[in-house]
Amino acid sequence: MEIRIFTIFPEMFNGPLNTSILKRAQEKDLVQFKLIDFRAYAPSKHQNVDDTPFGGGAGMVLKPEPVYYAVETELGDLSRYEGKIILLTPQGQQFDQELAKELAQEKSLALICGHYEGFDERIRALAHLEISIGDYVLTGGELPAMVVIDAVCRLLPGVLGESASPLSDSFYEGLLEYPQYTRPREFRGMMVPEVLLSGNHEEIRKWRLQEALKRTWQKRPDLLQKKELSAEEQRLLEEIRQEEHDGKDG
Ligand code: 9D3
Image 1 (cartoon, rainbow, N blue to C red):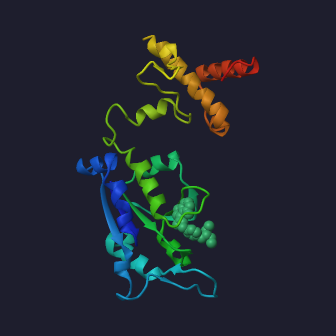
Image 2 (tube, helix red, strand yellow; image 1 turned 90 degrees about the vertical axis):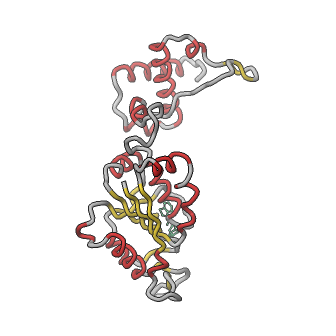
Image 3 (cartoon, protein in one colour; image 1 turned 30 degrees about the vertical axis):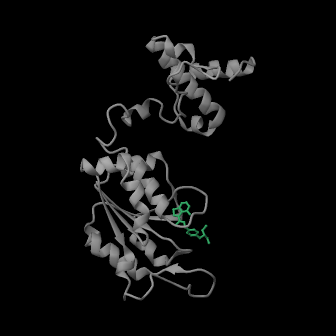
């Protein structure tokens, strides 16, 4: 996948893109990143990429020309561009795992980051979709772009090793994670649950599934509403409800 990032702060991306999994994904040529500073496309060298809003008011607005010039120069004829052009904006569709999966199917992505109070409205016409990463106010679209890139790239074939395959996400899809333990068996009086030491893989599988269901039920009941539960999951959840009702610890 090729990912182009349009920003006036390309240096913000150096850490995340050149560390760990994303670094390795580039080395394996599974993904290519190109950072484009749209300041380089300002109408003249000293002309700014932002300006005061027509009609008055505080703050600065990102001008359309540098963004259009940058995107058109990089992507060529937009009617022939095969990927998705994405505007990062607080008004966008809220990013989630489903959207990450959809974007992971694309051959290329172009992410446009604003870093102002807003965009000139005409910039929206460039984009196929607008994405927000949640209801909180950031200083720009760069961190959201990195969130989208991270979530999408880990889904690309070969990016994660076998052991951490995104396929293993799917068994517990839509659930919070089950509790995990490593050595030592006892730490400051806190024990690793016996079942995990038992070597009984079927018991371990059931325990993990039930713990994942329990956590989700307690902390994110909204996720359970969305999920279609198998017969086994319904049975395990019923047990959890019963235990809770009987006042066992949970
Ligand atoms: C005056 C209204 N503000 C919107 C709440 C203006 C505004 C504030 C901050 C416009 C842009 C920004 C910078 N944020 C982003 O560009 C952004 C963002 C975010 O702030 N939260 C979650 N997702 C995103 S995606 C892009």
